[in-house]
Each structure stands twice: as structure tokens, then as C-alpha cells.
Length: 116
Image (cartoon, rainbow, N blue to C red):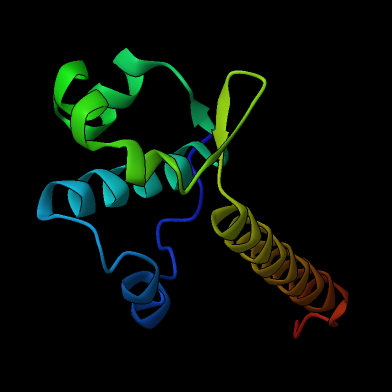
């Protein structure tokens, strides 16, 4: 399921957590984060799928991607990410509040007397 069209990215946190990454690893990590966000949750823990997401070969990802994949935890054939899960939850709550406000304003307008 595609999630919200925007995603918060806290650059200070990102850079402090990824100081040792190469340019290749930064690219992979950002692409994996983006795929996780778009899916609305965990991504498949399958070498071919991860290589496609990272737009690289399985061999290159296996050789250089371990520090990136270490930022995720494996469970039931999926890669989970604690921070992204937290941001997805926050986003879902924002969307729920917005939907509630829109629905309540619509109800209020429908109860207003018409000016006929």
C-alpha cells in the first residue's frame, strides 16, 4: 500500500547513523528507506528483490551492502526498520486526525440551515 506522499527525513539523525557509509551504501539505504515507506511497511528479505530496489546486482549488494542491511532487522522473511515504523505510525495518526477534522467539518456544514 502506498503511504503518504511525503516522508520526514531527519538529516542530523541520518548522517550520524551513516557516517561510515560509502556513496554506494548511501544510495542503497535511501532507496530501501523509500521502498519501505512506499510499501507502508517491511520489505522482502530476498537478495533479488533488494538488489532491484537498490538498482544494483546481487553480487555487488552482497559485497558492499552488509552495513546497510544491518540497519534493518530480519523477521519472517521481511526486513523491518524501527525508525521507519515509528514514522509510518506518526504519519498514519496525522492522516487519521486530518480525516476526522474533514469529516467533522463536513457534518457541521450539513447541519447549518440553508439560506433559502
